Length: 291
Image (cartoon, rainbow, N blue to C red; front, side, top):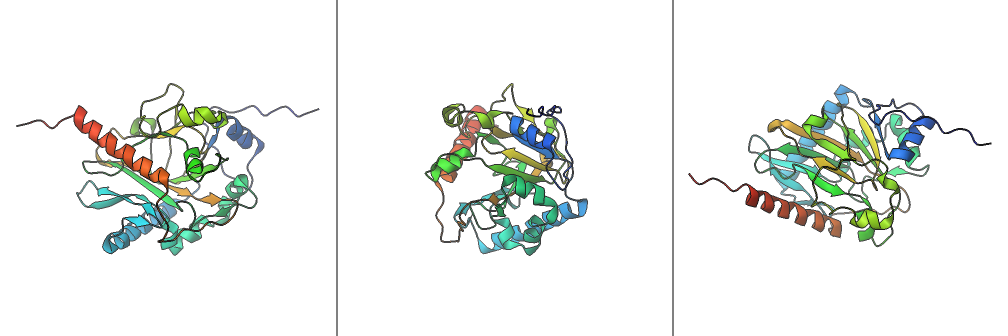
């Protein structure tokens, strides 16, 4: 006789990351497609990550980089009007401290959850991605429309596979501050709904089924990349609007390293087109007043 399935806690539950993923945590993830672990990184580690990102930004801006291993950087302006990288790729390839942090033993339960043979793909896909959303004129990254990460597999000419987005969050973000929205359970949708249920990246409209993922500095989130998810822009301006998150690139299967000779994948061209069209549409809807 099969054991009864564990009773699931509420959707806003904040779990503790221990030496193993518990049956309740696994059942919650299987049903809803996401987990939030309370403050896995310390305040000192959050500060270290921020400092390393600032150092990498200075290095890349001085070198005039626009791409890293074929992946475009999102470069705009910060609230002080200075150049600001809003999306990094392969960040851990440029910081020994970040590489060491990603390999810390506390993350082993997450790695095994992805797969016993999973590895940190420092030089694969987009590597360690860092998003820094800020709401100011000239910002390169204020929000992100609905999408699933299954689109990436299609551009690699293969059917969408199970995938895990493992994110570490560096700022306090409540639902009122914007942030990650996802639709629980949609990782179990069929192929056609994953492709056509929403307009990839173009659609930013709230969904009545969506859940706002609230985070504190050091929180770790895991969500299935096949979920429909988006990032709601902040209603605040300036540095108060800042939202920073890093994504740990766990990979399985053959090692597929990238280099500066790698070409830009097609899904990045689609994302860039959607951002350009959205900025144009915002300009049409809110034209500058003529004095």
